Length: 305
Ligand SMILES: Nc1ncnc2c1ncn2[C@@H]1O[C@H](COP(=O)(O)OP(=O)(O)OP(=O)(O)O)[C@@H](O)[C@H]1O
Image (cartoon, rainbow, N blue to C red; front, side, top):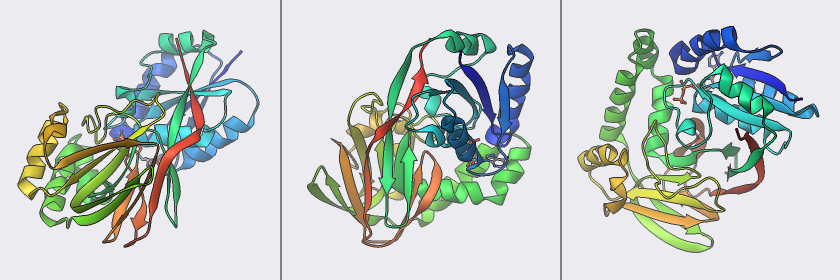
């Protein structure tokens, strides 16, 4: 018999996760355990503990991409812990590709199921940092927006009134006006590419990033390859238009957008550039330091109904 454990990030989706949990707990059949994360990466520590027990477990992560990322990181490599999300964040890119649940009935079905699939995890290594990603890892303009938005006092203030996205768009415009593109040296399975004037590079395990933008339409988390999208040599205002076309996947036709596929990526920038994995800040890459991205031999188990 599987054990049911629910992880709730009370901060996710501006309190949406907590609301969804309160609705769910009224319908959920006992027994179950519930855990509330109290700080950044708390859910990693908890999922690690859970995966040390030998008991087969279904872990339901209630939150956004950051919460799902932390839970999967904590139990990566364990075959007896299955992870499924109940999307309650502001972006929820994970749920656009991977299985999610919405109700107690769906959780009940997964509790009875004996089938799960192994999904691959991406891995990012820099001289100072090592991180996993489920959705994508990016460096440049997009990471700068993530970083600035998460620290914006306006986001917190606007969030109180449920309009946090207004602050987010404000950050996008500010970064659009001030971000300085940098040249990129990118190697894919050993093949070198020198690309000047790069706004960002994002390596994807699935298609979506930034809350529904189909940045990498060909990415499929069950294959053995990753795709990198590089946006370069484009004016600030055309970049804004490009972000509009990303939602429908038309950006790949633009000259400023290059797509590459492979199993192992290495890159470095001429200027210090910050990065993210699954929308979580993952540190700065100093000029000429290498970042390496590959598919990790490890996997995480996703339950099947
Ligand atoms: N109790 C807590 N208080 C504040 N932050 C927390 C707490 N628990 C976890 N966190 C952090 O909250 C951050 C945001 O979580 P998450 O990404 O799930 O929500 P979101 O940002 O609303 O959604 P999305 O990433 O889909 O836009 C994560 O970095 C996580 O580490």
